[in-house]
Image (cartoon, rainbow, N blue to C red; front, top):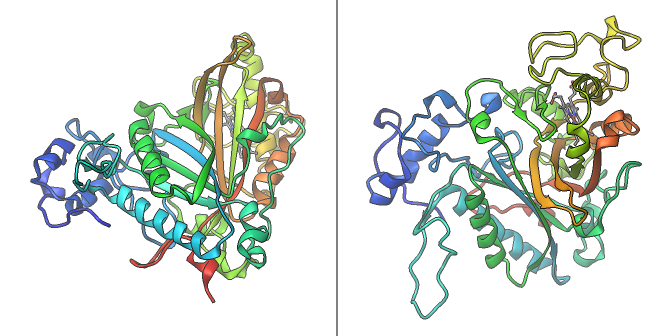
Length: 429
Ligand code: HEM
């Protein structure tokens, strides 16, 4: 399904608001051009945020659904996220394929936008109505990953499992809650607003009724004013530090091919080319304790200045630390988070982080329950996340954080053809 595509508008026409769209004078196809222009946030992968004007509420920002890779990986981080893990019901391979077809159709529609069909009022309405009669894209991406459990005996897919895909093990500082871990499928839903994410989630849950059961969800958010700002400003996490500074440049296609996208020569099953290993970690932050920790201590734990985000002893956020000139850690402690996470030695492989903050209210013990919804992508799980996490095991930051959930998934390659569907390579032959 796709939205209306026959209207006017575009670059010369100025920003297209949702109101204009609802008046029917402007087409979604034309607005797609604007969506590209109005792409927002860091990395500038989607367009020039400077063109977003006061009248543009961002509802018509659109991320293309089709392509060699799924959207929502190198896409500039949106302000709102929800990750939702599902288990697939039954053991029927054809039914799994039908599930993936339906899911593809819904994501394609939600990312494009369009009118909600009007049905006989004696029937349930066609949609939840959360976005009104005209679904608008709102910069939505829905990224689908498959877990190791999908390759068990149920669907006869064992031989096609990505080589490094396993159930996420517990690392030494973890206190994993099984109710918030793993799942056959993971949807990473991101857009400009929580409402658009909830609309997408409800739409998908409704259309996959009888095919999947929901296992767990976690909402996330980023400061919208930073996400929408021009430039390379990083968002601030709930420990008050700029986060994302040293991320590899997601707009650099060559770099992403090396770090993020599975390549044909990697020895992975052929269908996995263009996909990516996806790691999700729900990491609680003990913020009361952190807020009572001296600033100097906080900065030495992270390895960066809290206000500027600059490496210790430097002035600007994107200054590059010189660890070779500081072999004993006089400036940046040897166990500082950024130094362990990326010692900047030959052979250290970068990962693409795409984290969100989260807040789940409070615990029964009366503490704030908030933290980091850590998400990262890489073409090699062992050399990427696992190597970084292993270096971080025992870091001083552990006193202030506790991973409680998450898992490993394999983000499927993108859908290139109009009649293709997510995961179709799993059914070839
Ligand atoms: C609550 C947990 C965490 C917090 C609060 C946190 C915070 C930060 C901060 C403030 C930075 C510096 C700014 C930046 O370059 O983005 C950073 C960098 C980084 N973090 Fe984390 N992080 C957490 C967990 C993790 C985990 C689980 C991993 C991976 C296993 C990780 C990997 C990295 C990497 C690779 C860098 C970039 C280092 C560099 O290239 O200089 N972080 N983190």
